[in-house]
Image 1: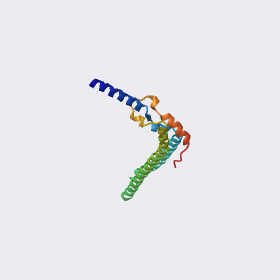
Image 2: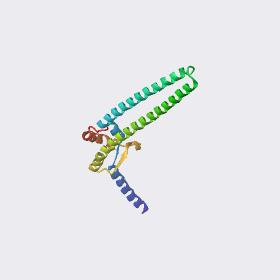
Image 3: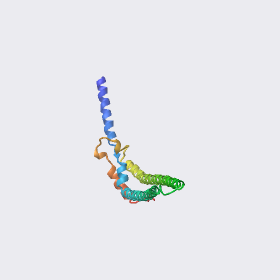
Image 4: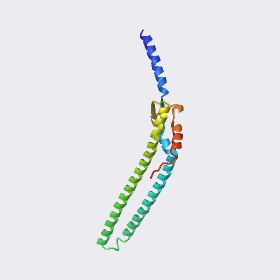
Length: 172
């Protein structure tokens, strides 16, 4: 008798698992953010901003380095008070440079994060509508899956819909 109930339980369990498999999908959000038309545009903007910031910071760093070399070369020529005053001014400039560098990097990171959030915010309603249309009960992040059937991956389908609806997003 126990064996009979165990068989029935097993049959119902397998039916439930097979029905649940049809309602589970996974998606790679990072792929969509980076490979959508809006994402590619954002990546170009971020790359250009990064190059510009690095260039500006390198120029400032070179100016400070030149000033340091000039101070060192004048060490034996200047009076002790004048030399110490130049060193103090140099140290103040280095502190200002470090503060500028930190501020620019923070601003750049905030811009990058906020811009990616805009893409994700535009993507959320599309994913929700897709899940409702396809009667998907569970959506998993692809990075969290070790193995999965390619047929359960909805990344490309959502990417096509997203590109159709959002060719461009204003990031600035």
